[in-house]
Structures are given as C-alpha cells and as structure tokens.
Amino acid sequence: SVEVRDENAVIKIVQSVMGAPGEITFVALGRLTNLALAISVEPRVASSLVEAVVMGGAVTVPGNVSMVSSANLWGDPEAADVVYRSGASVVQVGLDVCNKVEISAEQLSRVWAARTPVSELMEKATPFIQKAYAERGREMGPGAVKYNDVPAMSYVIDPTLFETRHLYVRIATGNELTQGQTLADLDGQTGEQPNTLVALDVDGARLSEMWAERVSAL
View 1 (cartoon, rainbow, N blue to C red):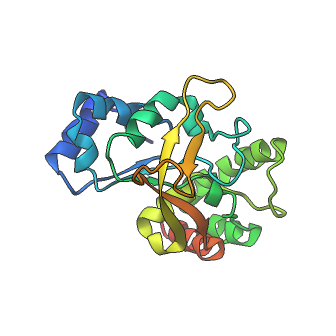
View 2: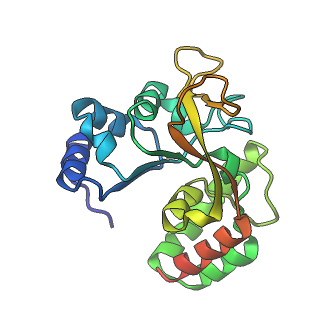
C-alpha cells in the first residue's frame, strides 16, 4: 500500500530544495505544473536544483499526442515554458530516446519470475501499456513493451547511456497545432545560449538490460 500525505506539493518542493540547495535532482515524469509553481513562488529553486530531468519533448521525431508534441509538455505547456526559461539545469529525456528503448519479452519474463512486489505490480500494469501503445500504432517486438518513464530514471542512474547536446529549447504555447512543442535550435539560428541538455540517442540494449537486472532485485 502507499501512504497518502496531506501536504501541498508546491510547498514541499520549495522546502525540500531550499533546505538542501545543490543536492536534489528533480525527475519529472508527468506535467511540470508543480515544479513551475514552485519556481514561481521561490525563483531560487531553479538554481538550487542539481538538475531538472524532464520526461517529455520531441526534437527529431513526431509527438505522441499531436504531430509535434509529447503528452507531458502538451498537457501544461505554460508550466513547461516556465521551467525551461527558469535557468534550471534542464535535461530533456523525450521521445527521441524513449522510442528506442524496448524491454524484450525475454527480459520481462526474467523480471516477472523474480516475484517481488515491484515486479508483480508491473506485471499487472504492463498489458494495459502494451494495449494502449498498440492502439496508437507504436511498433514493438512480440511481447515487448516500451515504458516512457524508464529512460528518464535511467539517465539519473547512468548518464553515459545517452548521447546528448546542449541546445536552446523553447516551448510552444497558445497555438492548438503546436501546443507543447519543444522547439530546439539545432544549428544556432537564434543566437541564444543553450538552456537544455537534450538526449538525442541512447544505448537501448544496455539500458533495457540494466532495467531488467535492477527491477528484478527490488
């Protein structure tokens, strides 16, 4: 079971980060609403984080909820814009790499065989993920799955799994066609200083094996 705490997420972020400046890496696996509000309340949160690792964005590939946008940034583009322009050390781990990380049927079988609380929970949840991705035409091997959260968490564990570039990135807001798009200056047209470390490639085989080994041991 999971304990539900009666706490305000924004206040908790501010208190945690400002209580340990330079020690906390924030991993955002959903919308950036709470982090953006925390930065708005206390702007020093941005510079006090080690990194803000964002699971979202699409620079060289299509989006997954629109032609150009990933779900997490599309869901609250204004919040994403606040975070990306805040001065925080943003690391974008988006669809450019998520699409390249597949957990094979063999790896899943090994994890399920561990029979830990975590593996049992994931075994129950995975068919729903596979079904949802199949309905969207996301290509996967027989019995395999792609978890979009896994690359972002893996970056924190081992950044060497990824090929990255420092780029100037802005978030599109206010337009239904481009809402939430990550506009990356790939060839320096804006003249702006890079504000985001963007993951553009990944060693998918090494990452998926690391996931299988670690989750089996939880």
